Image (cartoon, rainbow, N blue to C red):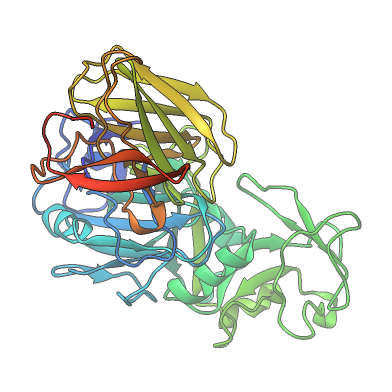
Length: 464
């Protein structure tokens, strides 16, 4: 994986920041540059079952030197065998519940731009045996007190400590909370991943969440936010998601129970049992410590949230690459790379840059002829496979085109086995002046053709 080229990626709208956005006295405000404040490497290719591969650098450039960022790094994709690690973490503080363990799927941490960039420069990807596409996403916003970032769904959450607050008042208070242009609501927990995040990465217990069955007993709905009105549960402890649906819920054992017929509001992280939900009455607020507001950027995004993505593919490069010289041309054949579906190939000659392209892919015997080459010049050929989420290349050994079929010098054929060759981005030919050419001679011995291989140093091709 070489010759990475940085490109600017920005998934959220950039607007000017003002102190009024935060409403927090004494907070360090970012100093944003006019350019996109994050860059990431181009789409690239990774080998399967290989540790510590370099994805290129993610770099933040738009924040002031003393501004503390809240950063998230997350792998997006179904293959749990893919992990990453940060080999340098000086100056960084992992967010609540996270640690800089050697192999990660997601993490959130805080630090200054300089410390964040230094750490991201050491990020390495380790792959498992499965091939296919995946995405590495890096996001950042200015850190704010008691605010947490979920790298998986890219939502922000704010814990508000308010002992004994009622659910009704917590709901009203959450609705006037703002974060980077988004309005808050009592948290809606829509998946196991989100529930695990609230359980393990929010430093709070006995907190109100946004579910209630006050309107109709036993019909539990999310009340606000994008999921407002979703009826995710019907009944008490032996109930279920409504017929034909499979909404997520995580009630504690024997809950909800509507004790005394007055429990209509949901809380989580109840009495030290993290991630477990309970239904409470209005007077249950005597045990409540506060509430959790959620912020979803939605279609418009957060006003000062920046995210860069690297789309990548795990798979081998094209294999069994062969080159066959002809009259001022060379025919290159190869087999399709493993674990990915290609859309097209290009074959590029070095020197000169002459090329040919083919679309589609068959498992074996793909072929392309590069024409217009100089007879007697030694070339190498880069075979690049393209697919939806990236590309990968392999470079052939050298071959020398001839002047004409009748006076051509002996054929030169070479083979590359991808299982022993690294996946590289397109490069020019080898500079190894000692590389020789394999020249085949046919001898007639007792009427049987025998091939004799002779390795010669680079130079004019000669014939017997």
